Image 1 (cartoon, rainbow, N blue to C red):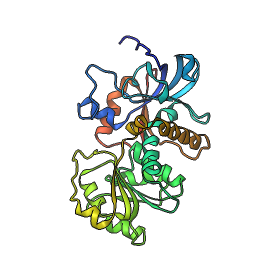
Image 2 (image 1 turned 90 degrees about the horizontal axis):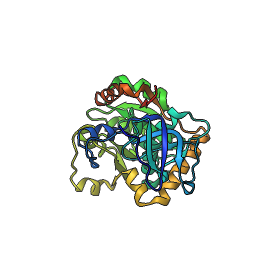
Image 3 (image 1 turned 135 degrees about the vertical axis):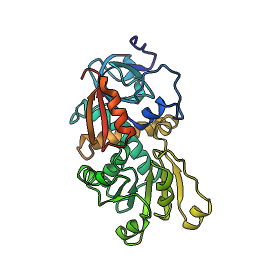
Amino acid sequence: MAVPQREAGEVMVRVRAASLNFPDLLMTRGAYQFKPEPPFTAGMELAGEVVEADETSGFAVGDRVMGGAKTGAFAALASVPASTLTPIPEAFDFIQGAAMGAAYSTAYTGLVELCDLKPGQWVLVQGASGGVGLAVCDLARTLGANVIAATGVATKIEAIDKAVQPDAVILAKGRFRERVAELTGGRLCDIVLDPVGGDVFDESTRCVAFGGKLVVAGFTSGRIAEIATNIPLIKGFSIVGLRAGEYARRFPERGDAIRKAIADLAEAKRISPTIDRVLPLSQWREGYEAMRNRELVGKVIFQPNG
């Protein structure tokens, strides 16, 4: 592939690490809402060193940065909008930097921006073994919430518990509302974040407290669930759609504030991403297959020069 051409407002980055996200998998199937024209270089999220930038970008050659765009990260060089990049916290290496942005931006947008999370509230996190789910657990716990992590794979419970130390980890199969009610003393949850959809969403509607919020973050189960409108009416909860990238694009000042807040928490070592495995980019198929087969607890990182 030719070296990408840097456009005005972009920064050329030598990629040291890139993170696999579920939309990357969907894009290879043409199943994501954004459908790049093939052939394209996949990869939404990266960390690396600036090799070329305009003076107005706020970055200089040699700066360590993390961020990305909709595509282009799975390569040795990537040209990305300067507005999407932030300095890597000094305490983090390139691998941690590559794993931070998308997952924690989604977590912060959902919990803080859309749901106004308060200390002491109960948060139920579906798909808790994924990069986003683990980030939501980590951030919610850091911000003082009570966290119930849920997974559809029993063998992942111990790993989730070790990675983010939630208040409880439950198996999200069948009728799990009773377990949620038991853990919350009958209160149920102020926030339920669901990137899974399907049967998990159906049962999650029974786990939201009156006045709570059910956050739709994806459909990794493959089935887009439906809901009768009398259910949120009678139970008094709101359904909120979460698209962190689009939120930041539509409200750039809030996007900047979110990135700064995440960077500050990372610099203070209050949050840290969970890494499942690090692979050379030449072994990208292993990473994609592990995600497709739901083998992961945390993020897959590709290294172009690994």
